[in-house]
Structure formats: C-alpha cells, structure tokens
Length: 281
Image 1 (cartoon, rainbow, N blue to C red):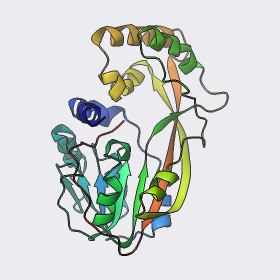
Image 2: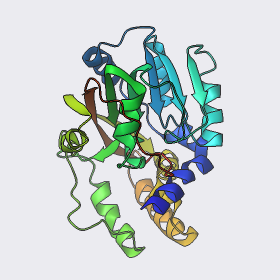
Image 3: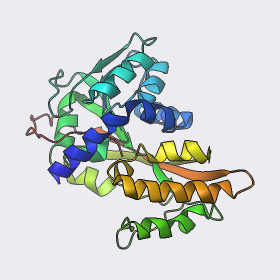
C-alpha cells in the first residue's frame, strides 16, 4: 500500500498546471463553516497538508489566516507559490507532512483538502496532534463524485467503456447521492487523540464541455496511471458521446464531507515517522 501511495501521489506533480486549471474550486461556504466551527480568527496559524497548487490555501489566506502550506511536489509547490504571490501570510514549504519539522504545539489548526487519505493512517493523527496547541483543530475533506437524483445519466452510460478497458468499479461500489458520502468519525475517534466536533456535507454541481471534462479526468490518479491505449479508447468514446448532445457538455456532481475535530489536551507525544507521500485524489 505504501508503494502504491507513493507512486500515485507523485503522479500529480506530472500534471501540475493541468491540475490547477481543471480541478474545481471548493465552495466558499465550506471555508465559512470551517472558520465558524473552529473559531479561527485573522492571524491564527494554520498548517495545510498537501496544498497542491493552493486552491484551499488561497481561501484560507483570504480569511486572514497565517498558512504554512506543505506540498512535496516540486512543480505543484512552484505553481502554488505563483498563485499565492499576493498573499504575504502564506509560506509554501516543499516537503512531506511526515518529514516536516514544524514547531510542536505551534498551530491553531491542521487542514487537509483532498489530501488526508494519502497520508499513512498509522501516523497522520499523531502528526497533526503534535503540530497543534492544546484544543487546536484538525479539519479535512475530499472533493468526490456524487450522483444527484435525476442527475446526468452520462456516468452510468460511460461505465460500460470503463468495463471494456479493464477499469471496472470495485465490488460493492455505490453511486453516493449528495449527503451520502462516507464519514470518517470512527477513524478520528479510534486515534485517541481527537474528539469529533462537526461533520457536514457540502455539495455542488459543475458543467463541463468536452475538452474541459477530458482535462479534469487527466488529473485523477487512476486515469494518469492508465495505458495510452486505455485513455485513447475512453477519451475517444467520451468525445463521441458528448458531441452528440445538443449542448456538448456533461454535468458532474461534487461533494465533500467537512470533518472537524478538536485535539485532546495534553496528548502531544511525537508520532512515528513514515516514508509515505501525501498527494491528491
């Protein structure tokens, strides 16, 4: 699992510019709720894990927070610095969360936007707890595909092509509706280091023309890892099918589950180090 995590996590750095262009922005209401729940105020210190090109970082900076943005990918970190050049309270650090030597207990919050699942589960909560001051907060979420009732039928239709090229959905994989994405409260509690404060579902939809949708797919680790032949077959069929539509577009549902947890006082033991690399889905 560690080898797969490192390989797939590193793949995002190969498409840094495309990632920045194609991946969606997170809704402003998500950040409004994060700040409201955690009581973060301008000037508070936040460490962001797996910052990518700075999509979430910029939203945090706009709220007056001092952000240390950790990003191990060289190209991703460079793009983040360019995107955040006008944000003097942001420091982009090219490093893994596991290798970062930040000030223990020096931060008000640890935030991870579509990156928490790439960090070794054996160490991630300990690393976060070490960084936070007593009663500091951990907040994480991931942007995922959701399927609104009565939504675009394209995704069910195109699945047959995925099946043909050997990219079948794993057994028992469902198509979650908005508000039905899995929650990670049990995982948080099992760490013994955090208490769950809030879990909230945030959903939105976006329309993509043909090439915009292809660009989006090229930022997902599974599609990056496909063989050229698989991509050619899949993308050719996507282009053909969407070109037959009057508006030549597809509507995709997005969802995220905002998890907010508070560190338990006095639990700041240094966690074990891991060699795994964080990334994005």
